[in-house]
Image (cartoon, rainbow, N blue to C red; front, side, top):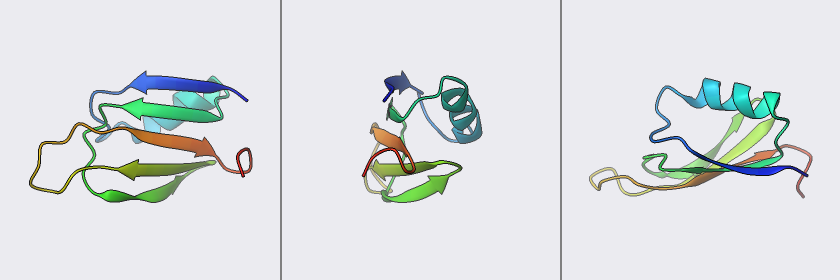
Length: 74
């Protein structure tokens, strides 16, 4: 398994670039820092499950999230 971290300094309008780069590097688990994502939830992004736990909409966002390649981690 390949693990990595990436300080994305805000993920708005960057998720396609992020997904493309982690595919090129063949990463399995990636922690994104400074996503500035608000709210909590999960999404499917290509081969990855994107888990995030941010702040409430009215708070200043400085959170982390994680991408896990589907099928690699139980």
